[in-house]
Length: 111
Image (cartoon, rainbow, N blue to C red; front, side):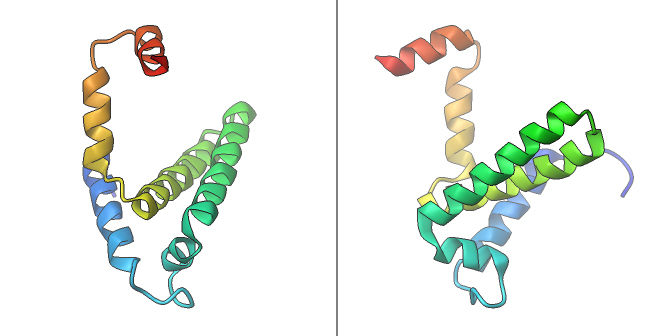
């Protein structure tokens, strides 16, 4: 594929695919098998992929990190779907933080 991909559009299509697989058989769909395992399975798999991405980052291998980042985003969306959280929900949370210092935002969450 040539040209730049629109990450937002890609993530929205992935979110829709994950939603469509919610009712699929866990025997034929990896996504359905994760969702069938509930929050614990989805969170565990997301955590595993996040660690793999962190290890790829320190290895200096950009191709490996890129692949692992894709895995992290996929598993994050599966975990969000299992919890009933949409990309629009996440976008709203991020938009609310725009223009705010990271230190200030973190302090505000503690109160």
